[in-house]
Image 1: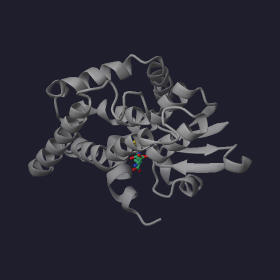
Image 2: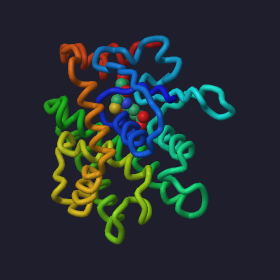
Image 3: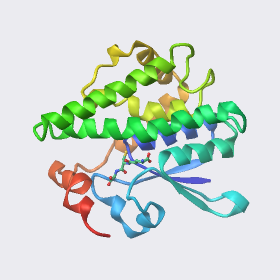
Image 4: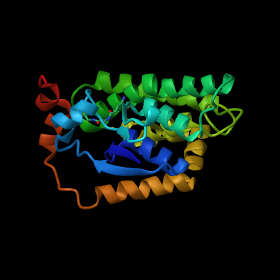
Length: 233
Ligand SMILES: N[C@@H](CCC(=O)N[C@@H](CS)C(=O)NCC(=O)O)C(=O)O
């Protein structure tokens, strides 16, 4: 059994898609990051960077429990555990890891900052909004280009690079860009959304959302970006 500490946002969604694709046994623990639950001392022991997703595999290597944070590392772990969506050796493995790391190192930070300046705080800085929107659009074009001769991002096969990119690309609207500018990426997104496992992950997220207490948005801003986030722990 794998315990998964998740929330309703893009990075945890990747892990749900992977669970649903592989059929690995998991149970969800909701960590409400809008209410500050990521700062609970027990959670910080698993995730020192106060972020979801995190997993604890009760049957980790050697039969001992293992916790893993960072969505890319979790996807790699689950791929190795299930033997799915990441070649065990050869060139294909490194093609998948290449794109998995590009999502973490380029796409995610640019899209996250674009979301912040374009959607959350549109009056804060036009320069920053333009900078991160343009950078996100640029990385979208890189992804669009890699789909010129195949259906999936890293190789001809569906992989954890696709699952990882999906968690972020689906949030394009909040970054202030147009998916129509990258037609191949738009078609890839439609292929992702048509996968039954992606639909099942969506249903789990909707279930998590239902019945959540409403959290004051100013309090949430402090938790995610302000005093609570920056407090020394
Ligand atoms: N690089 C991390 C990013 C994770 C991340 O940003 N998680 C967000 C939700 S999508 C979070 O937990 N934010 C809470 C906080 O920053 O306090 C990953 O890929 O797992």
